[in-house]
Length: 129
Image: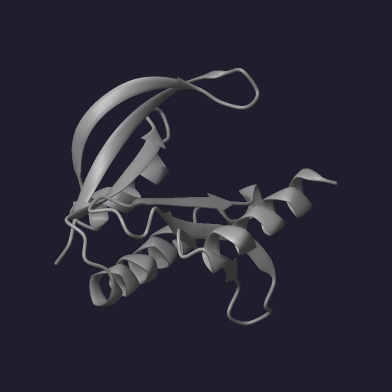
């Protein structure tokens, strides 16, 4: 099974269990697949939000639009205090997403990803409105 199929199957199961909300991001005019985004641990007081966009979709504001839409959904549907939004410290464009939504830096830490690379992360907290 490919990594993509595994991700889709796991996402569907997690949504059926009520743990996560995962959405795809499409261009409005052409329905081209741009990426995916989600909120994890929906029943937590501090669910985590995240996004992945293909490289050709970077720099067009899709990330802010997607996370803002998910935050609005969370504000309307979830009982939470803040969204956790981790981002690579060096990725300035991605850091602007939580900052535009009122997020504040809570902590910085390192994490090893699936490729065994060390990520230097900044964790933002985006408060509920």
